[in-house]
Length: 294
Image 1 (cartoon, rainbow, N blue to C red):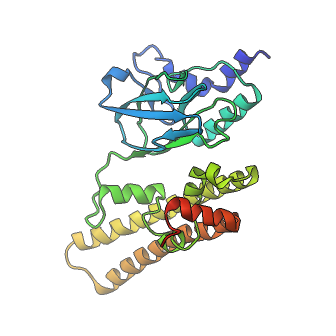
Image 2: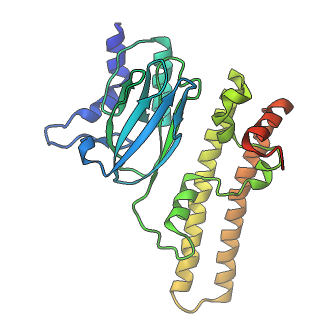
Image 3: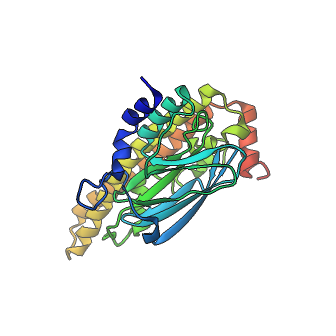
């Protein structure tokens, strides 16, 4: 089968985003829909380097926000910015590795030559975590990936938590819960992957670290969702007026247990991460993060 046919089949779910279906409105993907970049309310410049890194590597947007991405190639080789879910990007990266130079194009991607810039107009319609990566053969494997956190457009109705707090819990964010580990030679997988080149991670270490991070995020998001629900129940308890002592005790115990589970999930991940690194890599990590002098 010719490469362009392979590309057509593999990229079909995403390429269909440019099909307006005859109704003048782009069809949505699981991570949003393409829009005219001129309608963007926000411009995000993303630099791409030959160190196989995006800057910034993390972006936060609001649900429904129209963003004009401007990927800029600061390197000497071709790079690209491709939006998608982590699973989709992994599949396409593997395909590109097997078929270097395979043609592919869609509204959610921009191919940028050295010294040039591109444009992607996108509206994120669903809250959650999505990603952008360079799918030039070998670049994704080298760690050229960034994350987009899409915050829900709902306003938190929990008096004790801000909307940002709610989004952090729902996304499984660290929120300082792992400081006891991070500051005592037990790094987390996200920062380890960000420093993969400097730490000279082996291919096996990269794979194991990525799997650990994915499993942890899934667990933390589940616990975070239960914790938010428990905080909402506690808030509603007081909102109703008179509060019975036993009901209050149960509500507080519930939130305390879940907060403990949330913290344990983060600390346990750091504990496991340490077992994947050598002593030399741990020392290098502390130096790179500025902990060595403490």
